Every structure is written in C-alpha cells, then in structure tokens.
Amino acid sequence: MRLPHPIPYQGSKRNLASHILRFFPKYYKRLIEPFAGSAAISIASAYYFKSSRFFLNDINKPLMELWNDIINKPETIIKRYHDLWFEQIGKEEEFYYNIREKFNITKKPEFLLFLLAKCVKAAVRYNNSGKFNQSPDKRRLGRKPEMMREDILNVSKLLKFRTELSSKNYFDLIDNFANNDLIYLDPPYHGTGISGGFNYHSNIDHNLFIEFLKLLNKKNIPFILSYDGRTDKKVFGGTLPEFLELHKIEINAGRSSQATLLKRNNITYESVYLSPVLIEKLQTINDRDNGMFQFSSNLQNSLFTN
Image 1 (cartoon, rainbow, N blue to C red):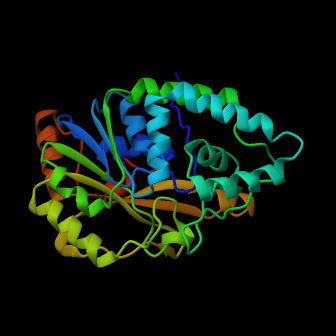
Image 2: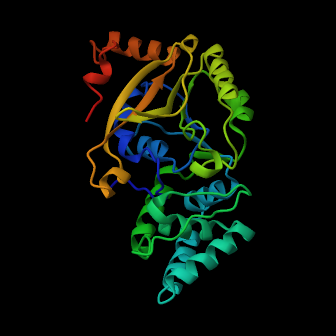
C-alpha cells in the first residue's frame, strides 16, 4: 500500500513527513494534531508504525465531519464523491460553482471533498464571512473516483478505531494533553487567517499562541512545531521568542509549486521546532542507542536536508 492522502491542499506536510517522523520519540501514548488539516503526519505515522493512537482536531468543523466520514464511514463518502464527480461531466465549471454554493449553505462533507479535489492549486480560500470562495481548476476534472476510493479506504484502515476527533479551538484542548502524548502543531503561517489558510476561519493570535507553547513547556508535554519557512530572503511566519528554548531545524522542501509553475528555481525551506522535553527524550534514546542523533547547531545542514 502506498502512503494514502485523500485530502490534498496547499501547505500539506505530506512531502516532509518522512523528515518530521525522524524526530518522534520511541515511547509515547498518543499522537495529537490540534491543527489537523490534511492529517498528513498522523497518516504517515500510522503507515510507518510510529503511532497507534491518534487525536485529530481542527476548528474547521466541516473538515472534521469529512474526516469522520473518511475514517468511520468510508463507503458512504466514496459513493457520494463518485456520484458528484460523474455528475459534473459536460458542465464542469457551472457544476463546481453550484456545489460551492451548496457547501456554503449546508457544509456537507461530500461537497467539501469535491471542492478540495478540484479547486485551483489545492489552495483553499475563505472570504471574510467564512465562505469557501476559491475557483475551480478548469484544466482538470479533479481527483478520479477510483484514486479517491483507494486513498479513503486505506486511510480508514490505518485510523479507524484508533482515532479521536474533535472541532475546538486549539487552546481549549490543553487540559486533555499529557506528558506521555506527542503533539504535532502545524498552524497556518502567521497572519494568513481566512485569506490564506484552510484550517481556520479566523486569524491565530501570535501572542496567544506563544502562551500556548509556554503552557506546553510548563506541563512538560513534548511537541514538534511547523511554524515558518522561507524562500530565498522572503520569510513566512512569525518570530518565536528565545525563552521557549525551541530547537530550530530547517528542511529543504525543494521548489514550491508556484515556483515550478513560473519556471523559477527558488528553493523553499520549512522550519520545524523541537520542544525542550522532546530534545531530552531524543537525547535519552540517543545515549541508549549509541549516538543515532547529534543535536548541534549544524543539524539542519547534515541529516535533514534533501
């Protein structure tokens, strides 16, 4: 089975998952994604036997309803997507806008899946009223039903009976976290909010998020944070304060899809941050396993670049 990915969208960490999984400790109870999005890291960790229990959360309620269908009712969402995909034939653009309007009214998960599979560059956009407003990619019909079917069934096999789902503000979850959990955080880049992000219908307050990270450190809860990136001299995302004592590692993510379309050679670097308690856990493993990791300022220039 290849690594399944039924929800594609811009900013997904699917292509970086193999790098990020290398920072997972050997022993923890549950993997938690408070900003689930495409759940790329949870899917990859299940696929590679890195985790056996999962908690997926996102404030985008229709997204979490879609995840519930994919994981727990795969045959239902497969059938509904199949019917929508074939119904569009011969009237593709008109049909897309009709489904977009229906989704904004009903929030039905099958409508969201159809839109995700066909919108421009998988770049989902909401307007200031929280309505889905991205246009269709007129060059294609969207993900073929047989491919979508395979991915949905395989994700269900990986996550069913092992995954808790919720749709809450990330800060409201902190009392549910324990120091034997592993938290993976992938909020939208600072300031993107409605106009730039898929996960949220409002901006994430930078200062409040810093307080959240402080609480995680105070509770000795290990976490991995994807928070910013850069292309040449252009930086995306906010600045994290030194008092959090996070270990920053840059991953060479190659050319962005936008750079490829424009025939440019700009290389994108994604940053991940490891929490202090996670570093301690990995160093303990390192000591026991004869130096598999070397945590130094040169780490990002050695093991974890493409």
